[in-house]
Length: 204
Image (cartoon, rainbow, N blue to C red):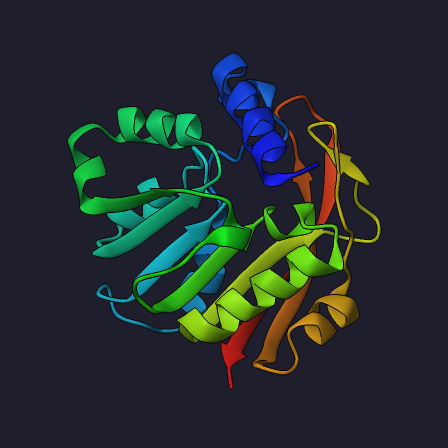
């Protein structure tokens, strides 16, 4: 599936489904928040949420007083939904609608957060592009959450690439030092379970 097909797929998903109808919805993304807090950075830290869609992470970050938040997603519809939900608070966030593999950042980030976007990159070329973008544009920390080797092999009808602590760490070991990895079960809105691996990294 090429970039245009991917975009069309996700626009359709977000146009036709509510949060309670998609597996990735979390009422409160506690694990992501815990990792972000663990870095000990101030509220002025530049944070980007990759594949943030209409995730609630941005709501909690704003509530906690973070001042420099960017949300990136391939689906403009997903970002529109998040903006509508946030109302006036949406003006305090930068919104970027693009495919992560073609993203050309105009600034560097202190915290790069990605829950369940990276595992959709299944070709070596896509992974290489992602690694290159993170190498060039992160000057602090990265949090990655993907389906684990005990997790699903597909999501939203698309193939994904499973990881474990070792393979995720190896993928980024040229430019990032692993800090911590955990696995956790995510309970979907329809009461199924998906096993994730989350790893935090520090830019070398």
